[in-house]
Length: 387
Ligand code: ADP
Image (cartoon, rainbow, N blue to C red):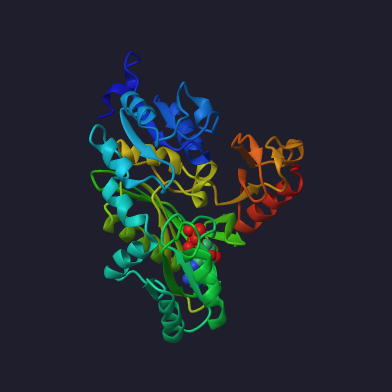
């Protein structure tokens, strides 16, 4: 399929649904590999849209823009899981789309994810569909408090989650999600007492070849990932188990492309599945500097059915820290000089026009001999960064 990429008269154009930082970093890898990129997104000048002449700022809800985007693209992939599968079906009538609409239907709903994976004996929290308010009560009775209520779809950075600490929280939770203008169907899951959160990125191509990245630790604050330690500072056996679970999940959904699998390490040293993202993942940004082939390049290799690249680390350890907005207004930071003065630290700024509190504006990756050293180097660079 990719035989045309080295033919300058007919460049291969990878279409990406979405123009945020994941599309931008995928584009950077694509350009290095000799591909071109088309981006469809709502609004001009998105991080990836600004990089290409094939920018479709009308978004995929605009059929004319979508058709023009399909025309120019040789194949299509995506950078977020919120694309309507009917749109993917529409594209799939004319172009290969990976991950496939069938895979997307399995992962867009957190309840279906858990049903799919528990069927193949992947450990998950206890979970149940919530059809009416009394189901929340029954869940609390069966599994105890606290438990977590989650919107089945469209949750990100914890925005669709609510911890139900006691029976009296049920009314509020139900009203918050179900009695709003747009009711959002829920699932409930037992609260996992974890010692660490882990993640693994897996790439899989159409031939079924799989490449699995090291297991990392993700550190969240207020349900948003703030930093990542690679490799996760846990026993090698546990890291292997997390990798096995992650590969099994991607194979179960016949995933093609790169997938990020989030898991809990419980206080009893069990690994429990949390969720899967059908795209390149924040926990894999460190792979750009720290692995032989980054998650972004492997995503391109996977969706174009090319041989996958080595996922092994080329440094002993790395720490990634997200640069989250600390104010509102213009997205250009005041000074990056301090951060750049720290050696072995790479800065990525996504070029978003506006900053908001908590918005992911960029990240930095520090590499070092140990995860502790990488963590302190990354934090000392962060301290020098001025918004
Ligand atoms: P999102 O899709 O919004 O990122 P997640 O389901 O991954 O939401 O939840 C975000 C964070 O909330 C997790 O990283 C974890 O810290 C916490 N969390 C989610 N589910 C549970 C659970 N069942 N038990 C304990 N903590 C949880």
